[in-house]
Length: 135
Image (cartoon, rainbow, N blue to C red):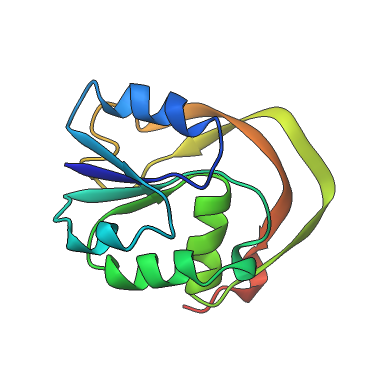
């Protein structure tokens, strides 16, 4: 089962539709404490508004499920970066609708049906400052 944390973003349902092709999906909002009673195989944290430091919910969720594979999309990725000590800040260039290429390096149930090299769509104004991530 894949737990999807819905940060009140309409893109979440695109993720859910894709994930349902591969596994059972349970959707929870970050402020729903029932999510801590689930036993997922993996977690997906969706996009959403704001900065990851604006809420403690995502930090608590990441801490609780940190032993599982976690995929963060947009705000979810920024939340993971923030959790592990990196700085999330406003980027010099807004990346709305920009296509980029990504490589998935570690095998995971989350990536098992995705090519190792895949094109992704970027839609964000915040960035993870790569010089601030601890080892």
